[in-house]
Image (tube, rainbow, N blue to C red):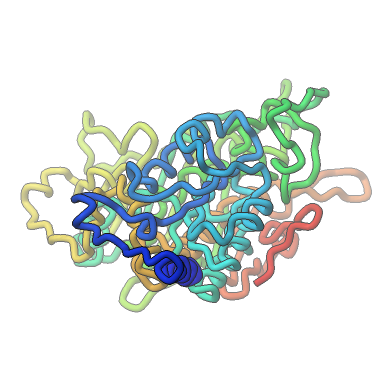
Length: 476
């Protein structure tokens, strides 16, 4: 914003000097008028899918300006280009940033997971504020880099886990931190994802690349592979090179609530089990190119100040935790797409996505208990105000509050991705001289969070940081 503000002041002063032009006060132009200089100029990198929500909310009916658009797949950008026809359009984010960096203040990134980090870092290095969809990154290492970069380049950031701006998230934080459950020791989190194919073999066959798609740009940092329609538009989530599976899709939404309420920080250990896949009678398959169809992951956190150790258990693929005894037989457990159950020394609490409908168990406690008022301020318009909150913070400048700034969402993302590290380690194979296969990673993995290393199984560390293809780099 500082560079753009200077540019705008220069333009204004030049116009006044050269033409004797006088700026008309806003109230003369009419109530509700927004001067162009007061609008945030936003570039949308990734123009379809979730961008069809992010961009309109940030644009806010013309209160801000969508100044540039970018997508490697022209089919995904049709609606955005029609809505903002004056916004220059590019396929390569690097070209957009090179040609338009003087005309934009901020960037919204809505691409597949494997491209979040390089795009976000490139924007921050130009001094642009960044809104990045969840999960913040594809790799644990990338999350730490973006967290550091946001502080170094002093830009306003927000991850797209909109539930962090919801009222219920703040209620749950307050209730737990006020001691309604006593000492929380276990949290169960589950989702019905994946709602796309997982646990499947790598596709074969040769397909023509659609003329609207720049396949090399779409692959970006990922290893080269032939185009296949199974990867697009959103099925990329289930493939390890591109997406982060069920955890990446929903973990940042569900786990965010206990992560905040319990001030969890870095975990110290992780283990898991995954759903088996059989291609024939007694013929088990392990498809490491695709995430498994289901998994259960156990993530352990140490004591934090007055709070004791916590075990967070994640379930996906339709698996759910044991039904609490305190829940009546006909009462629903969580919501359609998942839920959260906190277990403490003084009781339990159940909630849905984004912490929705938080309920003390047994539910009759809701009438018997005086519930504390949230000690955290609510965000205007709640979940739907997540993008606007970021926009307003961008205008105020670095240091302005956002619900999921990278200093908060970076460590959260690292924790979420620990589950994927455990899954990949679980399926890691070794062969002996006879050709027998073993799975040495099927154990509890010990994690050194500060140094981002598994300390008791070296092969797992290859899943902390991947090698980028081509000229893509990540360095601050």
